[in-house]
Amino acid sequence: ESRDSAGVLGSSVALDADGLPKIIYGQRLPGHGGITVRRIAAEPPLTASSTGSAVSVDVVTNAARFKWTLSRLNGKPARRGSSAASTVRLKPPAKDGLGLAIDAKPALKAQAIDIVSPTPGWKGRIYASRSATPPPTVSDPNWTEVGSIPRATARTRARLDTQGKAFRWYLIWIESFAPGQSTVEISEVFLYR
Image 1 (tube, rainbow, N blue to C red):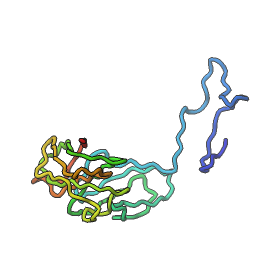
Image 2 (image 1 turned 180 degrees about the horizontal axis):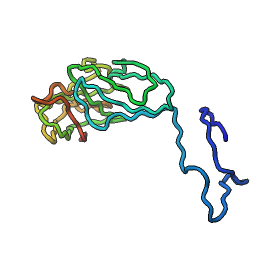
Image 3 (image 1 turned 45 degrees about the vertical axis):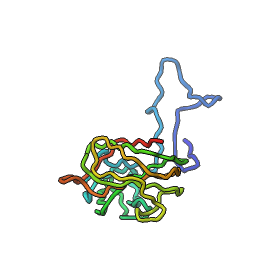
Image 4 (image 1 turned 90 degrees about the vertical axis):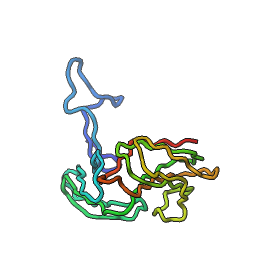
């Protein structure tokens, strides 16, 4: 057994002078193959959730207590808590508008964007920013509106007016859902020069 610099205790079969496992031909190594090193692991839902609805996040901590924070795009906490449970139920606050920020690092003079969405009918705008990190709110003056989506289809192409400037961040800001929708799914995004 030995402990690494992170304090994780590990064990191994006996090793030879070269640091390789001592094995005898025809015999299996004892124990279970593989290595798992983690203090905490979290698995959020794999599908979209409805606006304002609760979601479950499975957490593995070996029963240790942990703190969690649900943050907005601006990094400001929307909800905080602590738990030792293996499942945490979170309910993001319902807000008007939501967005998906795309990092085009180092920067891109995009002329168009394609958005593939299995939930057509929503409306939105496209913003761009030259900041190193995405500006904290859509109303921040570092966001520049460069395009709009009057009504999304299964594959929507929007022309972008970047005035020849290269931007690091592109934001798809969803302003409203289609009638009867409570979620918007975006499966692919393509930026074109």
